[in-house]
Image (cartoon, rainbow, N blue to C red; front, side):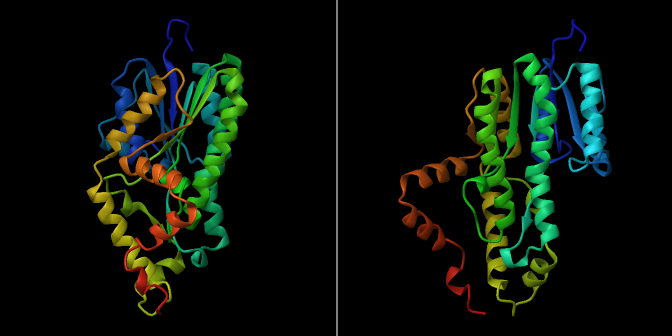
Length: 294
């Protein structure tokens, strides 16, 4: 980085839509950052559709977080021209909807690779520079699904639980170098992101087949979650403001509730005896008495 340019370098993955795009737009209002916004090559057009173009302090770069060569190329450019990444925001990810019985090995690997292994790989690339500078922030976008699991979301929750565990260990490991680690835990965000949820071949079939044993699970949970998301008072812009607050804090906490319901479930999980907590949630599931009748 040019010595006269002391802007912090922020890398945001999955920045072309949803929460990532909201974070990007919010950071662009602050002149203290040099932002590297990434998206998969086939999604780069979304930046232009949002009226975003490269400038002196905004790079738009293709990045499939699963591809090592693309990760290495991006970090080398940042290291050569900007003296590395100061703030890493691991936002890229996706959600797979399926009960355990409907997730195959390849699908399970892809979910874990995207939501857990890729963030870990990006963190490994960012840490040497952060350790050298004895400063840095790593912000991992987790989920309420990383502290509590819901039916039909098994492998998604597994990926977020893994991200939470590794991030907690990392918090201890890098603190001696003044590197801060924070997990942002959004719950239900008022957006159309539920349209982006992926189904496995088996879960897609079961969702349409009323004779399938798991049909009640999908036919109950999918509209239930969509309704809750539409009623949520928290949009992606509000969650993005919490990310910015973490960036500005000298000593941010390890975990930050991203939405109102995230705070509610955190308190509920801590206060209730575990058997009451699980039974209360079980009997709160939509049309639960119909499950298992097929």
